[in-house]
Length: 599
Ligand SMILES: [Zn+2]
Image (cartoon, rainbow, N blue to C red; front, side, top):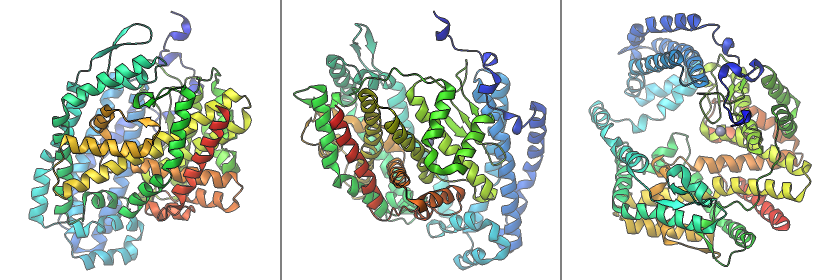
């Protein structure tokens, strides 16, 4: 084995490539004394219990102490989880991490009386809290608590729902056990002649094989397992949708969809608008499918030909410094203030760059109100990692701007806006590379990479969103979800999406059983809206729209101080109309033309 193949020990990684967590705690002892301080406060947390409705001062005191506690807890937990992720085998940090989680759970239990106690107050009293100057600092969390009032039931009913909560988790738990633990898949002989047992992790790589026989056999054998378990999968999915429908109707929501979207203060018209806008642009997607068929030189395009790469991987490598420079140059349209913050991050050890033995895999941006917005990476010198750096940097600068402008109580932002900040950076970097890299091969690679992101994020997630909406409505109309009904409907949506150039293999009708997303409670549409919003903002910034930059940066600074749709509207993107989605789909259409010219 060559030296390059060896994973480094953490001690072998140079300090300049590691994050500096001393900004949080200088030592384990320092962390330990904070832990003791917080633990000592636990018995005291219940001191407002039963007294919240007595006066606004008590409510203010309670919310303020809750905010202080959560800020301190955030600091304690962040350090322990980052230290733990440096080396998951290190038992010291494993135990400190467990202690922090344990304390969070205990504090969560101790403070769980607050929301129900507030919600049991009469509506007029609750609304008057929003106008009270002593509660001004807590207006945002109070507003979101009060919004639940119409869906909060009597004490007895709430008690019953709480008692049922664990058993209502049974379907999603059964699904995970069945799909992830119990299912066994057959083997295929791969393109190197080796017999490979198919697994969830290997399935997509087998479908990326250049050898069509491997793709076809992997596809057919993998789905044969779902075919033979189709009744169980249908029953489990129906059970999940029925529990959602039960809880949402018990809480007086018109449907499970309404209940889920309401958490982000989003109405079904946004969800349905996304589906309608994407459906309205399916002809462009069909054109892309046609190009795929032609590029692969196939007489018939099958569902097992969807993942095989159209373009060869670039053999360019990027040392870390070069990656940083490219990301900085890609993010120039975000203005000099933004770039200064990126440089600050790159030069002051926010990022844990390299892989080491035992380190948490993947990449994330994480931190708390009292820390820099740290980034964990496992940097490899390839192009994919340039985009990972741009993406995570987007989250980190969002956090930094929000932390610098907002008090702790409104600093946290929601997924709905978070993925805009990260995806925008990816699309700006993409545009910069497309302008700079001249060879046909590089251009084709980049355009194809961009098309794949669109395909996976906007088209696929919106199709999932449509399927989830439809089957949930069927359950609410008391239509039994038989395997045949689920499969037929899934095939129909696939047929609509992929268009006339795709041969619709019957196995794909069982894909609904493989995809865990249908257990995520109407969550995945947010990927599609964020991607679309980011793409719309990116094309405006690049076309020199002067106002756009200022509006976007104020959205980042606004953190969680407003509901997500309002934040996006302030940034110039109004999701209550289909315009932003259509704007993004035009970018996709241009890319398809561009790719057509290159391939
Ligand atoms: Zn992200």
